Amino acid sequence: MFYKYFLAIFFCCFMGVAKEGSYSYEISSPESAKELSAYQFTLPAEALYNLGGYSEKIRLYNKDGEVVPYMIRQKTFHKKRLIFRKLGASASTVKKCADGSLEMIFNLHDGSVQPSKIQINTSMKNFEQQVQIYGYNKAKGNWILLLGDGFLFDSSQNLQAKKLSIPFDSQNFRSFKLVFSQASLERRQALRKIRNVWKENTPDLKEQADVVVTQNFKIDEVQFWGWKMAVTEQKLSYLSFKAVTNSIKIEKPFNQVVELLHNSNAVFPICGIRVQCENKNFSRKIEILMKNNTLLGEIFSVELPGFRNRDTDFLFKTPVQSPQPITFKILNGENPPLKLGDFEWIVPEFEFSFLCEKKLFPIKVTADPEGVNPKYKQDEIIQEVLRRLTPYPVSLKNGSGNRIEVKSVSAHTETPGWQRWIMWIGVVTAVVIMGFGIFAAGKKIDEIDEK
Image (cartoon, rainbow, N blue to C red; front, side, top):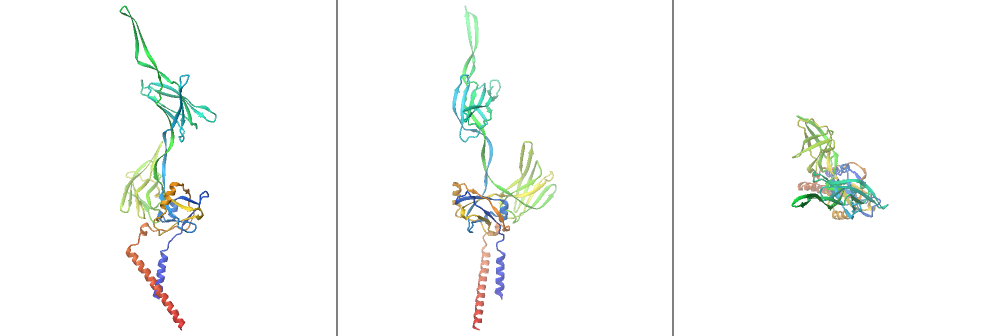
């Protein structure tokens, strides 16, 4: 009878450690995809939560149930902003007109944005120029006046002031004609011409006159300027996931202490904390107390007319990989407590890339509670394909099932030697007892047959 009880206990124990949860998503192939293509999708924080919270446990399967290798990385984005830059343009015509004006024609280079300003560089001093700007209508073959009263000047002789640029609306024209009112300037020389007439050794007549010379209006360079969207830097992309607040209390005099419940129902790794706050125009020092670690930082908000800046995010230098108690302390000093809203964990936005035949869709996305970070041999192949091809963007659909419960990563490390030996002794013992039971049952059957 003993072996029967032992086998019952043994199988109950193994049933107890069976994988829990069955949440999964589905990915469909775009109609425009080829037979064999690269695909890419991002994993929202809610989806990662439903799949257990650990990206390294994510698994992809095709419709035949076969594993689909994938490559994972944190999504990045390029921060963009408008920059006022000099544009490429070439002069095709420069000539002096019959009325004494100077005419120049410029063509924008391919790829240049529309200009919004012209600027001249010149070594000329003390001048005034009226400027007209025309745009060439290629469809009608004529010039359209864009600006008729442009004005440039330099008054270095009397006042250190100058204006060498003119804003204008270029519309959609790609060729421009600039007309300067004077191709040459009359200059008065610094030396004066003096003529003396003598009569019988006595000055009889004295004439004085200024010397005026003509000088060409020399332009060193004509520049076209316009607003261009430029990539300034590459940044990592993050998502936010609502944190469970265990308690909020006030310490003397006004410090606010928030106990955050950081358990297995979170998403990992945790890269920081975001504070939702109703207050405006404040600055506070903060302390974040974690296991064997204390972090110092600052949160602030500035909202003034014409200026707004707010930063209530705090990123950890080292991401948190497993559950641990975290205390968020706001050092208000003599200031009144802040009106706090929700607290959110800042987590990475993961991007998954994989190769698959169209006929093997739909792809099932789920998680292995006992799995570790997979190492596929196809990583280099996927990277090479992504360098050559643009992957098809796909998304997760039809999420269903129970949330997959996963223990912390530390619980899934390699089993220590003595624990592994105990496990093997238990398995061997169970097998021996099972064999003994089968042998005893067979012998009993033989005895019954003999009778």
